[in-house]
Length: 163
Ligand SMILES: [Zn+2]
Image 1 (cartoon, rainbow, N blue to C red):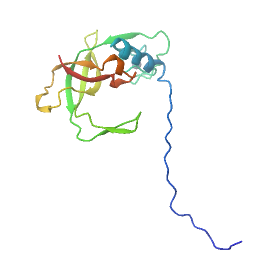
Image 2: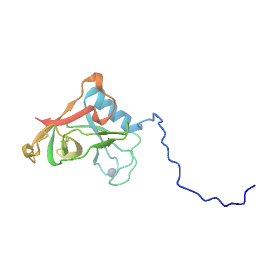
Image 3: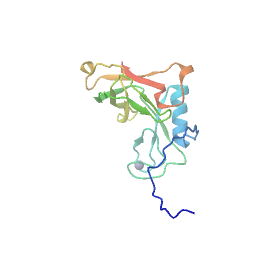
Image 4: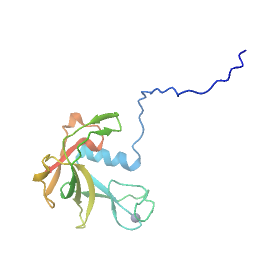
């Protein structure tokens, strides 16, 4: 047996290609089903503070109340008002496929109409790629993928386009 000491050298790096499926969750599953199958955007009204949660959440972001039983679904949008936008000049990583994508579309912060006169914030791509043509306050609505291409994912809305 050798008495030489061994030193650790650089670690060996490898990657695994594992495909997994996991449930979207109680709320996200229903929210995605309504979005993909019915083209409806829905929020949940918090039982603690009354605020609309979009996308829906079991635990309220504002007051931390649990909203698990007797869920009150509220339809919002589909139209909304563009508040601001961000032109992203780099590809984004799709967490599902680990592929870099470049949509060529800016990302908008939209206030979706809500029945009580308020609204809920939504962040999504905008159809208009030329940011010089975007205006704060312009009305927008979702443009959905063809039904046969939908994946029960928020990108089933391709982007929001001008009304
Ligand atoms: Zn709340």
